[in-house]
Length: 458
Image 1 (cartoon, helix red, strand yellow):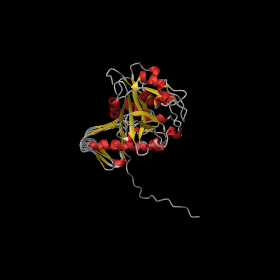
Image 2: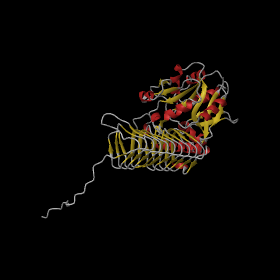
Image 3: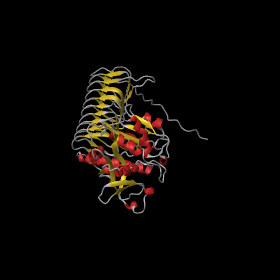
Image 4: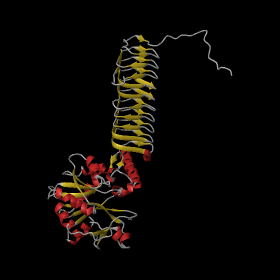
């Protein structure tokens, strides 16, 4: 491959996907919280030296709306096969482009595999990615001569009985120059069982012209899985989950049950991390050294510091958890929650857009919203920070060392001074001074002559 030739991924994404039974175009179906097409574009970006081009068709407006502005598109209408799809892209590409053909419904391909394919392509030839499978049903078979050289590809509908027993199959992923594609696509026809322009026919043309064909055989058949229905989508989800779980374990993470973890984003981990069953990790998650995550917890776009323990059934999203913290069980940290070192957040506590200082504790059944909680503060059970007046949000500020009694309502905007104590059951509507006890509740009264009401007799 010439080092000067710009590598341009062309992603074929025009299909309807009728077997999905969905109003959403097939390539926009979700896989691990991203569309199939988004997965392919992410990989394409790691091998491209020029902007990718996506060939759209069915649901073209929907597909284009999901693409970054730098992604080029071409329309395929009508849809007359893979060869026709690539021909729709060629007018938008420079003459010296080296085109690698990818597919919007083949989301598990690895960048390393594509780099190996590019390296396997002869300088003046074609690169072809194949794979060997136990059951080749539905795939185009790779035809080789007695010397082992590729001489063509035959689609299953056009294959004879002998050819149907070939286990090396076509992935559809190929590399050649724009000039070569232009020549070959101008020569193929629709004289086949489906009446379409097969991109695979270009392989036979290249062989007949004496063009060298460099083959890279993919090591993992799961990389080349095409998604056509919900069952195949579920299989791809499982394959991706297993791949990511294996990557985590190779980084030193202990997974209590690798078959039951969902990894739907970019995860970075420190040493000696432990993750229990049923955990879901989404977005960008960073786990420090010796972090422990309990079962059935969901963590999204969050940083967790060293030596922190997240107990079971927590939901943590867009938050920052300091080192040495203890969270849960059944705690919820919403966007903007920030826990200082050694903070404790207990069961059925919700924190939103609030900072909880170092060593502070909010252990039971409380809501901390739009607040600044100082260091070594103790927030008693059932405390509520009433931050919303029906139109606007207001902040609560609690000074270092304060103690908030159980069943307290702090009506924002309000400040509680350092080392202040708020009596249990108080409704605080004005600032409470530091170092003093503040109580705001009705006086307790006992009525000696009171009698419980009784039902009237019929």
